[in-house]
Amino acid sequence: MGTSGNKTAWNIGGAVVGVLLAGLAIFGLVQSQNSIKQPQTYNNVISYDS
Amino acid sequence: MSPHRRTWGALAGLLCGLLALGPALRPGYLLVYDMVFVPRLELSARTLGVDGSVPRAVPNDAVVALLSQLAPGWVVQKVLLLAVFVGVGAGVAGLVRTRVGGVAAAVAACWNPYVAERLAIGHWGFLLGYACLPWVASAAAACRDGRPYGRCRLATALVLVALTGSTGSVLALIVAACVLLLPSAAAAARGAAARLTDLVWVAVVALLANAPWWYPFLVVSADTPADSGGVEAFMSRADTPYGVLPSLLTGGGIWNKGVWFDERMSTVVAGVALVGVTVSVAFWVRSTGWRRHPATGGLAIAGVIGLLTAGLSSVVGGKDLVTWIVTSVPGGGLMRDSQKFVALWVILLAVCVGTLTEIARAAMSRRQAGRAGSALLALALAAWPVATLPSMAWGATGRWDAAQYPASQLDLAARIDRLPAGSVAVFPWTLYRRYAWNDDIVLLDPWQRLISREVLVNDDLPLSSRTVRGESSESRQIGDALATGTDVTSVLRRVGVRYVLVLTDQPPAPGVPDVSRLDQIVQAQDVALYDLGAGGVAPVAAPGGYRYAGLAAGGTALVVVAIAWVVAGLRRPSGDQSDRSVAHATMY
Image (cartoon, rainbow over all chains, first blue to last red; front, side, top):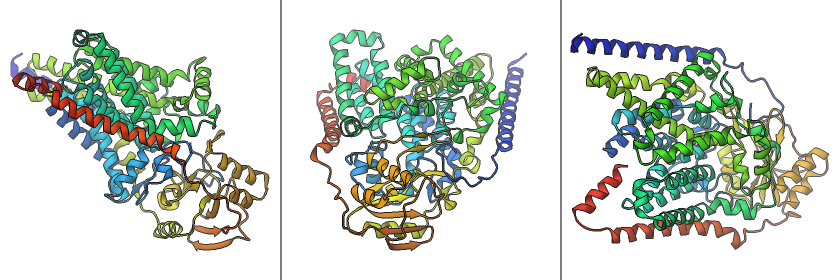
């Protein structure tokens, strides 16, 4: 494979890695949004860890 | 060259800061948990650490008070928060060899669970200290190797980190000690006497510069024992499905589940983060990364110490040891929230990520990937910290936003400042609030900072599982009176309180005193102010002169460091050789 072929292969490799990471980030965002807590219900005491 | 790398690192850090803070950068205040900024924080006995209370925000609140003389509080807050990102980005970029590596290291240092969770809980002082760590490492290496101005640079870094508070200073001292004690060829050539002098120099500067917080902590507050239950309450926790150690390895593991980032509970996302950490560290070890920069060997030791310390209370027997340290060793309370020590590991990890990116790029270049292509692929590989913590973006997907204090409450604060002398007690008798105008986010009571006089609040830490006892005896007396139903107003008068501020928009627990027979001064929306009258109120004694000794020592540190720079400048040899050595010194 020549130099241009090598470059193309690396570019494709970079694109694949980028797409995989972007997919992971979107998956993470979906996970994050799915676990959003229900609106706060009234608590008589405000806890530091709530 | 290093300045170039640092510039790129700073730019990458700035970009991360803008993306992470997002809506929180609008005019207004980011008010979350312990992060309380007000329009104008005044210098007071409390901010200076001379009021006899435990100095939790000393001297960083004093720094904010000084900066508030120059700009509104919300501007000061944004500048300090962005400084975290720019500072740590530029700092870690100086610990790798190339621009691409510097950018990758900066992204890893800025975008990680440690920064995200500490921002979410409002520990901005910790984060400023964290941003100083790579600079301390570089300066310590310069000092150890005898480079020009090395001792001055290290002393300056230690003074700067001392301004961020106790946590940053302790972490910085660990870094400085590890780097200074690690043998190197340049250090060996200087001889044992010079190295001993370095250590003594660091000890003296650190002791003086940190006196504003350790002196009141050890001397003034020595009679307030820490609650041993705090160790279990604040020990590191698993915020991933893989347990405590993997959570810490990836930079997370803070005790407060309210500030966790939910995607980290995903097996896939946390698993990729763990793989990213493992691969980055493995490549750094394989490439003998400790030889790639004079500071990284010591930084590696500090990182491992930080990781072990953070996890200590979570292993068998470790909790008992930490409990003993917290309750028996002066200043041991710093070990209570042990996850903060993982900052040392996160800085090392950022350097590993930067090194991995450099190695990957070099390997790709050798295989004819093309300069731009290899840089892009390397940066794509280095983006795993962002991909595994996507919800840190845009103010934690909108959770961090700027809010404005209601004008009525600011007016009331100004009015209280004009009232005759007397302390203020804020009720309901608890430390944290939720305000509708701040999206009901848990927030440390802001009245201690809104009012420029002594304000008493309950310093017990209410957790969902238990309450961690505070250290203030006055606060305890008021709390006991409320709990037992005895006459609260007489207790208030005895501890010097004249004014009672009742927040009517807050849940009433754990209690509000009977104010029906008190003189109401103000009834505003969501708040009422009562006057107990001057009669019978114990006068609040002005701080004795001895309480200012810590501040005086801190001022002495500034003078000592300034003199050291002048002396080093006068001793600097002239000629080309010197210029080259100075250039070499700034390179790291």
